[in-house]
Image 1: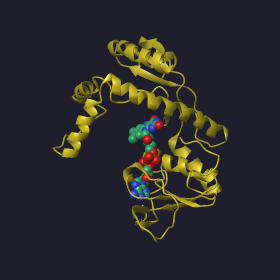
Image 2: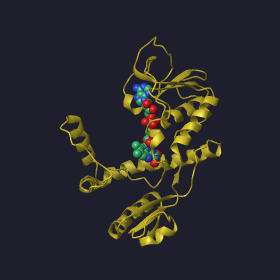
Image 3: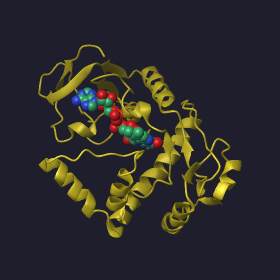
Image 4: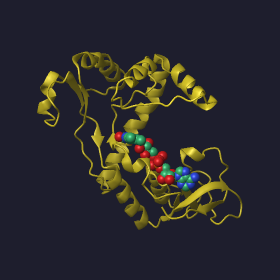
Length: 271
Ligand SMILES: Cc1cc2nc3c(=O)[nH]c(=O)nc-3n(C[C@H](O)[C@H](O)[C@H](O)COP(=O)(O)OP(=O)(O)OC[C@H]3O[C@@H](n4cnc5c(N)ncnc54)[C@H](O)[C@@H]3O)c2cc1C
């Protein structure tokens, strides 16, 4: 999440028009921050606002997820897990230079030093994100916010015990603590689980929300502040003198690298 309030960002003056490309949670938070700093904002989406990743995710706001995916042994572990019939993860190998290069770069980051480097950055983001979500919820943005923590459940005792090292690392380095529930003790906390478990770790500081409700509330909040929404319009380039004039254009990740000038949204057929 992005801090709100205060004066306009550098190079912009109050009342100038900013176009936010991409109506996911990132675009919505950019729009919120900008409109609260006195700018006029239009959000443009190639499909519908809040209908992509920001609609269907798990809704966790989770300081416990401080370690990145690139951890020592992650590649071997994931490959082994993928052999299982009900593996939650699959990769279709391709002989493409891009795929091989992505995989190679990921694999060489799977070491303790790179993992902790990334974790330092993730930790700072997760902590500030938690503060800002709480502030937004207190300010009345509805998202079915729950402060009940998150349970990491292990099917067998070996994997429950193996998690001790990870828990200790996260606790000692980042101060994020979990309570252990060996065996079926966790059933008292979550009766919906089936007996016969290895154990569970409860991160009490984690929270969750309903992402679709959050996106609806953010839209209502933004519309109430005069933010305009243009949907079914893909932005595929920038030029001077396009249909929409903007002083700045925050972009979704997929479009980074394009120069921020005026732009011409291409109207799609309605989704
Ligand atoms: C299965 C799953 C579970 C997840 N669980 C969690 C979780 O529990 N907690 C958590 O914090 N995160 C979670 N995430 C990650 C989270 O969903 C994403 O990080 C977040 O939604 C990204 O927001 P976004 O605004 O960047 O992207 P999106 O929500 O995907 O929005 C991007 C928008 O940009 C639009 N767009 C793209 N290109 C253009 C263009 N050229 N012109 C106009 N519009 C364009 C798209 O149509 C889209 O609406 C999860 C993700 C997945 C897939």
